Length: 109
Image (cartoon, rainbow, N blue to C red; front, side, top):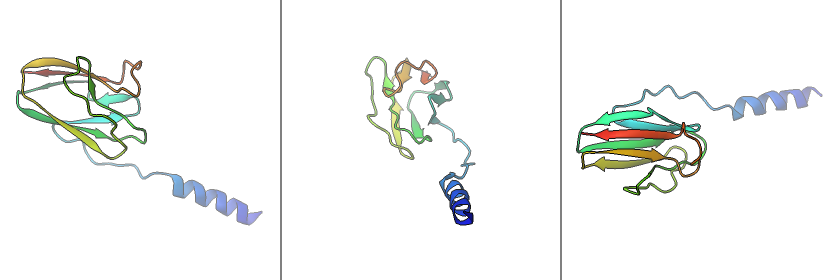
C-alpha cells in the first residue's frame, strides 16, 4: 500500500509542468489556452510579429480575410509574419473559431 502511495505522489510530481516565468517580449503574441495575449496590438508598418504557442494544445494564426495563415503551430513553436501594409487585421485560431476570446486585432500604421 505504501508503494502505491509513493507511486501516486511521484507520478503527480513528475507530470506537473514547471511554470515558465519567461517574460513576454516586444512584438510577441502568445497563444494561450483559448486566448491570444495581447488581444489588441498596434504596430508600425514593417514590424514582424512572433506568434508563440505557449499552450499544450495546437493553435493557428489565421487572418479573417485570408491575408495570411500559419497552419498548425504545435506547443513550443512559433509563426512569424511581417506586416508590410498599413491596415487592420482580425486574426483567429482555426482550431477554436467559435471562441471570441481567441482573437487578436492588429492595427498597422
